Length: 281
Image (tube, rainbow, N blue to C red; front, top):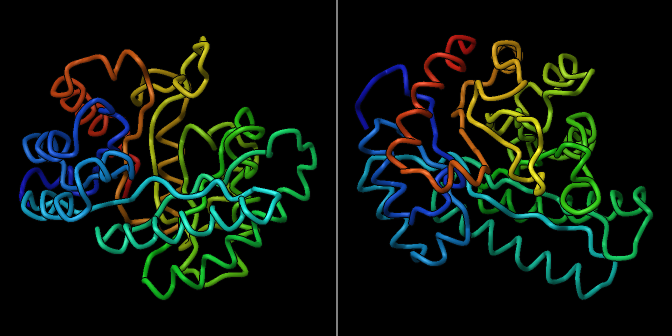
């Protein structure tokens, strides 16, 4: 896909235009000169895996990620087996789409469970098991640490350091990590951990942390420049660590979802050029 060379690394994470179909999101990327897209499994399933693959290929786009696998913390054998089966399906889908990585949101505490240490241990064991299958399918798993506010219900990996502790015993081409601005911007150890991540960085996602937070904290994201994240600092850290891959804009925000997708994409491009790109090398 040819276009503005300044946008060569920009990717639209499909969640940013949540109400758009796969076809509409792909078309929007093509019209706005965005060369990559991060897809989500649910709309891909609705559109059909093969049709999605063809839509992306015909538009000349690449798939920067597939979201999401994970939720690997079940304590019972049946829950563990179901999680393994679903994540193997997700790996197969990522392989079919040629996705650069499969993002894993690892899951929170099972209902009624308060043993965070044991839960993290189970999660790490399942990831180790999945890594072999991912390597066979040539798919890279990308562990996404999440802001601690989501520890109970979504992600027991709360820091980049914890994600790297799980990833590092495994092959780097099979298991990497996500640096998501929303989830890591606050971390006092960020400089050291991004440098430690190095070639393990499988995805760099950007959005802003906005306040006051909405009732649904998950939707407390904005486009770069709307909140508190220092994108200049974060971009320099990721670049210094050697990351040269796509930069996904992933925003969960009710007002943005309700807006005209074309206006959202145009503003996304503008914010990327002015606030994110200058720090990337």
